[in-house]
Each structure stands twice: as C-alpha cells, then as structure tokens.
Length: 194
Ligand code: 5GP
Image (cartoon, rainbow, N blue to C red; front, top):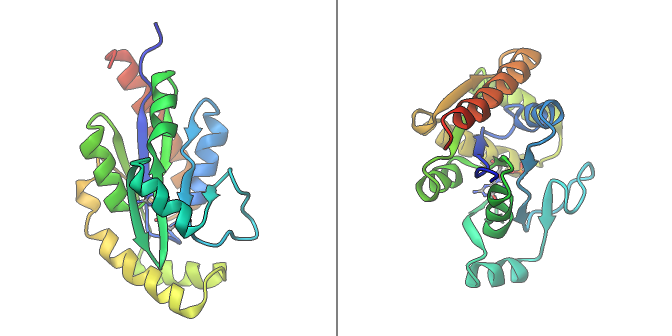
C-alpha cells in the first residue's frame, strides 16, 4: 500500500527569494506536487492561471469559504489567498508530497490541522536587502511595497515557530540547502514509516 504523502509548507516574506528557491526544489525533485492556492489577487504577467494560483473572483472565493473548501485562508494586501483542502488531501492520500508556498499564519494553521507537516522558513539577509529586492522586482506599486515590508517585519517575528530555517544570503546556496532539506524531510519520514 502507498503510504501517505508528506506536507511541506514554505514561508518567507515576499522578496526573500522564495519563489525562485521553490522553483529549483520542484525541478530537482519532480515527484513533489506544488499546492495551487486560490487567490483574488490580479495575475502578474509572468503567471498562468492554474499554475501558480487559481485566480478567482472575490465572490467565488467567499463561496468557497462558505462551503468549507479551504484548510485555511488569509486576507492581506486587500486580496484573499486560500489553501484548497481537496487538493492537499487528494495528493497526500495518493502518497504524493505536497509543497505549500504560504504565509506564516497559514503555515501555522496547516501545522495545527496536520501536525506531521514540516514547516520551512526562508530568511532574507536583512530588511534593507529585502526592500532593495522588492524595489528591483518592480511588480508592486509604492503602497503595496510598503504593505509588503510591514508584513515582512510582522512575519519575521514568527520564525521560531518553524521546524527549519534557511538563510538566503547567496541564492544558489539557499537553493541547494532547501533541496537537501526537503530531500531529508521526505527520506527521514519515509524511513520512519509515518
Ligand atoms: P504573492 O501575492 O506574492 O503571490 O503572495 C503573497 C503571500 O501570500 C505570500 O506570503 C504567499 O506565500 C502567501 N500565500 C499564497 N498562497 C497562500 C495560501 O493559500 N494561504 C495563505 N495563508 N497564504 C498564501
């Protein structure tokens, strides 16, 4: 019989390099399934509906809240983000490891509901460096940028609640560190038979 798949949730303030790092993890370990959340945030030019997110309307999102379709959901920067319960459960029941890219509060909620989940936090070198990276990215307007920085400071306060921390000072090293860590999490838990 196939064992249950693992849940790995990765959090980081936006601009910490999380998306890039996660892309390398998914490339290096192709059997991992990326959890596609639903969001009401406008799609960025680089994104595809059904790949990074399911981009849905606020009305549709609220309907899903009422129907208990989310494991957890959050509203920040005026937009809703939620993890779809069915997506996670179907995959882990089929023995697949699911990787969630999710904010800190969402990650802690996932851990409450699925205590076996592993939580990873990616640390930016500093708030100044984070600001420089966000400015460089140019995907947000000034107000959004300010909100994201405030949020980053808030999120950093929760880092000790995570199971693993990865420092992103040099991107390639952070990518390799995260890949080894994820491999270790999957391997270790498989050996224990949990
Ligand atoms: P972005 O707009 O940059 O894609 O994401 C903003 C924040 O939302 C990030 O911290 C991201 O990890 C988080 N996020 C994405 N999907 C979910 C989700 O399903 N639930 C929660 N709680 N946060 C999410």
